Length: 512
Ligand SMILES: Cc1cc2nc3c(=O)[nH]c(=O)nc-3n(C[C@H](O)[C@H](O)[C@H](O)COP(=O)(O)OP(=O)(O)OC[C@H]3O[C@@H](n4cnc5c(N)ncnc54)[C@H](O)[C@@H]3O)c2cc1C
Ligand SMILES: NC(=O)c1ccc[n+]([C@@H]2O[C@H](COP(=O)([O-])OP(=O)(O)OC[C@H]3O[C@@H](n4cnc5c(N)ncnc54)[C@H](OP(=O)(O)O)[C@@H]3O)[C@@H](O)[C@H]2O)c1
Image (tube, rainbow, N blue to C red):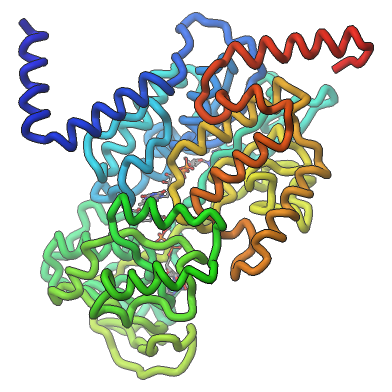
């Protein structure tokens, strides 16, 4: 009876919401085909052991992939469970939500989104659900900042010089993210301000109704703060932005097309999407579109409602520099389009009762890794595939070397990077040699020599996929792993072939 009721309610849902139903169905299929099976609770994970540093979505997803393929893991998270599990999504406002469509944020194949743009709570729930499903609750050490990762004389990794408690590891996944503690910059004469100042990630419960709100910064958090103030019915909202960033529509097709620039940087055709954005998206607000800064140089913000709110007179977006904070507002030097930071303009006071600092987050440090991986020309992000230090590819720093991109932090690449690491660990013939990794880095630099940014300072998702295809094809010993690398499939097959290769090499007198 319960089954019939469930089927009936599903049918009603499908008829009422055909698109949502198809989206949920698609995710069920993806989860069924691509999710590695969680290990049985008593299962012995006999393959190499991986230390995962960071309990955000990258760390949890990477660890779930590892145990799903029979590799043991331990997650080390600096913060306590409440603030650490889920990473940055445990520490931002409950009103925060995904900017990009959730189909581009399937950070693990078993993730099932119920909406196109899930909220902070829904995102955290999915991270925790992957963590529990793969039995990672028994494999996570909270409240443990990793400050040292070293190799012992057997080539095994030791965390925080503590083998007694943690044992040793064959590989390291550094998943520390790029958004650490809130960045509170000091503004000139800030002490003069008589109202409160909050960081943009700490707005829950803050009363701004009927107040004049000043938002400092011009990034994604500034837009979130503006939306918060609109929702709370602030009297006036001014965003004080010192540099222009591109804003692209919150439209899955547009965003996917923009991320398909396989060159991963500005090309002679970049004026086309830029012109289209100005003409059909910015329209009368073209003044706030960046001038002299290409679309493929910096992470764009994804938002479609901002312009409507500006047009409706609910908020103003002001370009310029803060001269000084005053008792009732900020003395601001308004700059015209194209005038660089600190350039000439005209000063006026922008009144405010509350300041919201949307000035970003401090970058978590990777300095716990050995000094050797920070070589001058080959330090992060200038690593093999951006995440493997050429000095030691048993380290994989997924999403931790990221600077700017058109793509997403939480998608299939987390699984691909993890499986590349697992392949390097179990199959020595696939493991890249240092000179060849450096050659690949130089080759990528050569290909992107005309890009206005450094070769690894900006990339697109299409470029990332091209990198994976290139490095999979270039070494014939990796060919048998291709279904595994890209889809996590045929897990038993490559291992069997590796054993046979080993036997053959042994019989030829060439030990591993
Ligand atoms: C409000 C907000 C909205 C966002 N929306 C999007 C979006 O729409 N699309 C998108 O692609 N990205 C978005 N991002 C970027 C966001 O950083 C990623 O989506 C994603 O959450 C990053 O996950 P992560 O696991 O890599 O890093 P984090 O979530 O930052 O997790 C890293 C974890 O590592 C821990 N850690 C750090 N150093 C150490 C150490 N030494 N030892 C042990 N543990 C350590 C930290 O405590 C933290 O818990 C958003 C960010 C914010 C702030
Ligand atoms: N919903 C979402 O998807 C969402 C929401 C929030 C954040 N995020 C992500 O989280 C990351 C951080 O975003 P963010 O917006 O918090 O930070 P951000 O992108 O680093 O932007 C910070 C802003 O503050 C400005 N700023 C910094 N110091 C300043 C100072 N002293 N005076 C005046 N302005 C100053 C910066 O200007 P300059 O550029 O000139 O330095 C910049 O405009 C990004 O990856 C972003 O995509 C996503």
